Length: 170
Image (cartoon, rainbow, N blue to C red; front, side, top):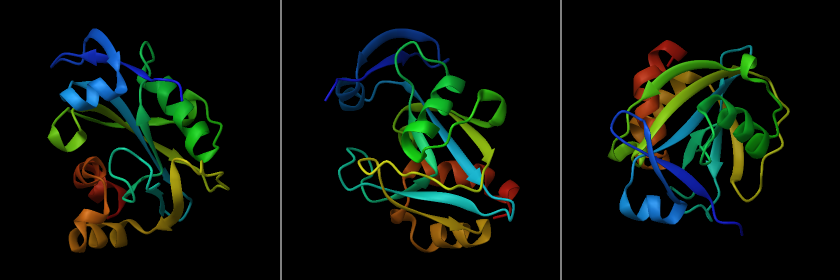
């Protein structure tokens, strides 16, 4: 498997270096990621259950699509790339709406995040090495599930939902 390299950033999300994924995670270095929340016409959001082989939060529920920025990549390009890789959606940057910026912290795994919103009804082609399965959930149900069983969701996704859940109808 090809080694991934990420840009390492400072407290202002300015690139200050580059390091291998394993080093970034092992040392808790600040880096960048995207999350894309996908909603259908009925307002439901699509969740992915992460594969048990993932190095971070295996088997946990997460946004429809999430991933790191490659070194030299910008947030918008990463969101488009991750949509294609993880759930088989071909979208242009104009299809995605930047929704919320989340500061790097322990709950995000020291990632600065841009959260995007996309309207799409599927079908999806789930990447089997990344995603065990997916499901559509009504936002209010998602909020209740997170409250009752928080450990079933990635820490970053819980933080994101705390910030945007009410806006999403949850």
